[in-house]
Image (tube, rainbow, N blue to C red):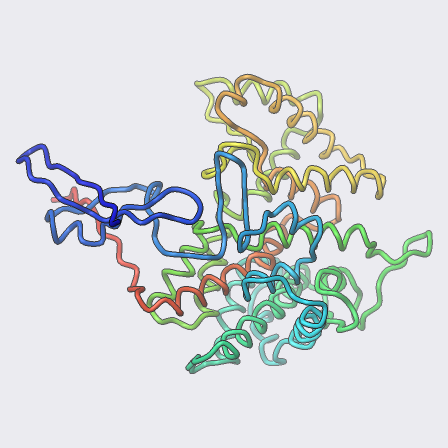
Length: 426
């Protein structure tokens, strides 16, 4: 039976009927695509807090329960029991890979991780010291001039080839962006290393592939570090219709090249209200400076006359503990034990967390630690500089963006994104 909702204009008593569509998970939606035609009015939804912009089968979030699923699978299971490449395969194909499929996928990404030699000139055109996110966005857009400059994607094989290419190259581009920012020579990918280890290798190695050896004789890339980074990539892989993903879909709606759409997503992610938040968390912890100063800053948060805000707390969607934050909290404890970490920043963060989880002010407002609060601390513990926090987010999110792009292009009902406005000018 068809389900509908009736809206009445109390100014004139006229009523209008609109269809209701049920979701497999989450709230139903009202189809208001004919609202203007029927009523002569637009709807107003500042920030799209109550608007579904698309149909999707990729990612589901229940903010009240603190639940995140990729293709129906809970993030807890994926992060703890599956690698990032398995997560990538799941997002792209709708199911986890078999062992043979995973080996094939892994090998292809390793061999596609190299970038065109002429693309390196893009990096050289930026001044030393340029933020890696600016270089990363520009180099990603430039990829469109090297690969698929005239796209005519027709079938699943072409979608997969295009997706695998960008997923494989993003860590290399990010590592090169960082090394250029500090004036260091580029280190090419090592196909003998896994996806996450290879990124750390390109970030840390000296030219010609030599890794620093610490006084104990061990390599500087430890298995727990690879596991930690791999988990962070998985947790960032997709997150429904957030600002950067919506940007990718909006640019896709114009028919632009997919790598250009992803470049736009990278730029959107850079904002401190979005992917740049973990960089801001560390900057704030550094500003607090010492555990003994935490109480004074918490008092400032509670002061209605002070505009100071605690970074890394609260979330637009989650009104419960961010499930990704829970996983990272456990990972942080592992790193502390296995690497012997007990840094000053970690102590400050743990004190803030202790207060926030037990203080009525935070509990009442549902201000739980989010993924940015823990990821910044963990990345700092791994010796990764602040300027690379958001590029690491980009590496993890690339698979989500390209999967969302593919889903958008396959949907024959989509139109160019064109919101309307409430005009208040002269």
